[in-house]
Length: 252
Image (tube, rainbow, N blue to C red; front, side, top):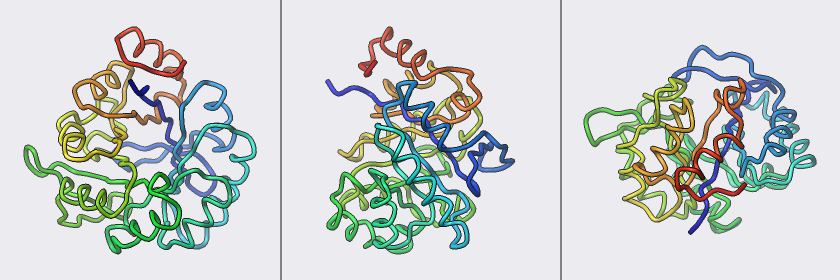
């Protein structure tokens, strides 16, 4: 049985880690490279960096973070935010990232997924989806950092992206993000049942019991969390021990 992955998420804003609630009210949470080194030592399986101010002006900042991080950690990490072209993907990967995450650009230009998968392999292409519930069993895709509704049905979009070559889905519930009230189980279950690629559950982690729930009931392959790790409410190891004790295979 494959082990389930624990993935701290680092939202990077102008070179600093930040965390908000439902994509708003951002607070400083430290230096991204220092945080990455800490999580590497703590036993995280992977890391995700999301450049949430990914404008052209600050692009060099995140590249610097990627390069410094790659020099100091040994676990895989994904970088997303502002990646619009295959050249952008190549720049991130050449500087040491293992995967790239695409959201807005992929919605605007789905062929980006296909081109990236053909050039770098589908294992390098992560589809990030910010999904908001519009009625029971139906979620809408949002882009531009959760600011723009697209009218796209989340399940249909994710299935399309899988066919185009996405190797993994980073699935964020906008309704649950930063609330610490638990992951959106129906959303994760619906997506996990709809595709064959791994699903990373994101949005709502308040403790290990929420992770256990989404891994079991939501059928997620990995769990992503930010606040509970950044502010040291829980350690990666304590979460893994809890999951192991409750029958979830993890790498300790």
